[in-house]
Image (cartoon, rainbow, N blue to C red; front, side):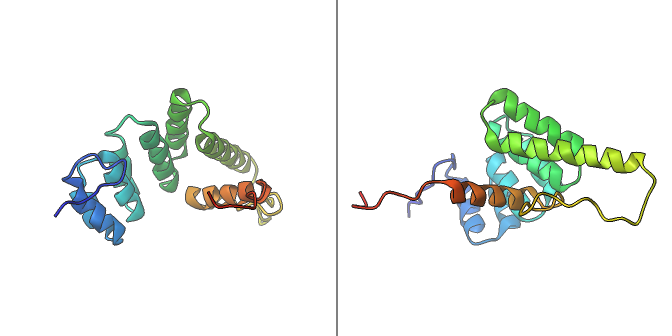
Length: 163
């Protein structure tokens, strides 16, 4: 029985991992994958962010550095996440998602520094821009929000023949 692997799954040995991944069995997929990027993706989906960071660190691809930054951000390790996004931008200056996440984390660090410099108070944090997700949202939610806004601004597809 031949298994057709999608682009990005380099080895037939990873086919078992892909099947587990597609079925939502992310821990089993992570154990089965040989490819560090796919292994990291499976650990990330399983909520095992430290294991995802370790897997992503075994690859030097732009995608691995970007995903490592996302996992580090989920762990609250903002300095390391920022460093990962800076590596992405050094390799691919046009990587819009890394630029967006970098700006978000830098803004978050500035807010934390300001709040640490002032005396603690019972006042709530300042509100974000209207319609923007809170800064504490995970990167995946922030990316979905960004994509939704881009889709709203995009011109509607042309009408006519579907081809």
